[in-house]
Length: 137
Image (cartoon, rainbow, N blue to C red; front, side, top):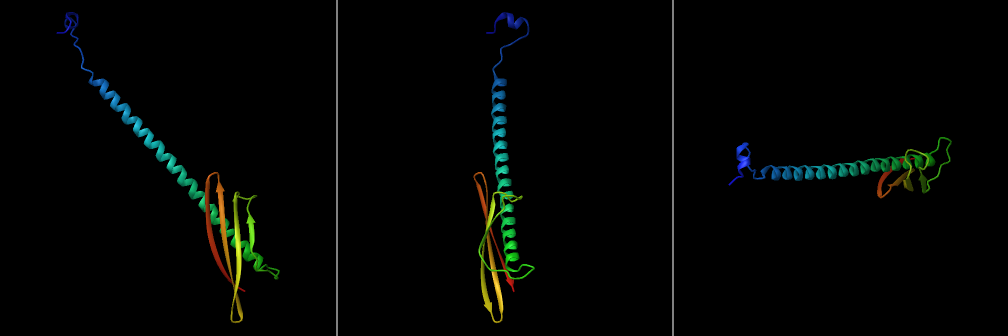
């Protein structure tokens, strides 16, 4: 069945199982590399949203603090007004905060509610946060 020159040298024909095993291993390694690539991409997106969300929170908080400073400045004579703050020249670049100030008289005291809404953008990512502060005059 085998050619005589193969038998004389101790060689026999092979059935090809090594090729099947090699192809199987290549497919498995390729699938694992695609899965790892997708996991890394998802992780990178998640971190981008997380950082942008933190920037949006800090922008809303900064807007609220700036509005409180306008309401109750150290020299006196502040006003309760709606203001938009752009943070273009700071670490909060591409973020802005819109503040709304309302006053509520309670007896002889006046309470102010400042609502600061922020939005940050980076490419196609957009996040926003809202911070509310109540101040007594």
